[in-house]
Amino acid sequence: MICESYFNNNNYYNCKKIIKVKNKVVIITGASSGIGKALAYEFSAHGSKVVLAARDSDSLTKITEEINKNGGDAIFVKTDVSIEGDCENLINEAINSCGRIDAIINNAGISMRALFEDADLSVIKKLMDVNFWGTVFCTKFALPHILKQKGSVVGVSSIAGIKALPARTGYSASKYAMDGFLEALRVENLKKGIHVLIAYPGFTASNIRNTSLGADGSPQGESPRNEDKMMSPEAVARHI
Image (cartoon, rainbow, N blue to C red; front, side, top):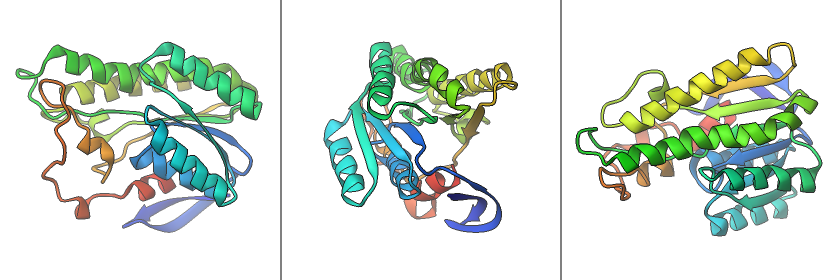
């Protein structure tokens, strides 16, 4: 069980209710690092069967082996969420291995740091392909199974999906698009018993910042922000 709580400085307080996640099958995209990796460990620690997806199969192998070694239940499927066929394969593999899907957490994402006037259009397109279309593809193929379980669809958005940030035009646009998609999905399924959650983390000490794309599409590397003052991926995972 997980205590659904508010938290401050990574600590829980004001427990509201208990959410049962033991033996639930949870797909997590972008699970090779950052928030996705933290989600894998968090849900596994509470008894969920986790299906991990990302492009980095080496990292996924290590995470999966560690979870299983510690008594958890994890598999991974190498997945590029910007490719429709990869997303369909992810869902099929989850069903073949686990028999059902209770929740999908659309966490895979990339960011950018460049003024729009300087950015190549391919950068904007890549962010939309991963952040928005990745969510659409995975949710489309998972939805029939989640409807059967009356389960959950989760989207990991950002404060940039609420208030657009400068030098993040593509990132903000992709998160706004994700929000619109998931909010409409929620309304469409109000009477079908499924739960749609959109999470809006603030600045997080996550690998997404290190892989943020520059104006020409190449990774910019470490940012100048002080990570000590940021939320940890583990705190975000516990809150979700």
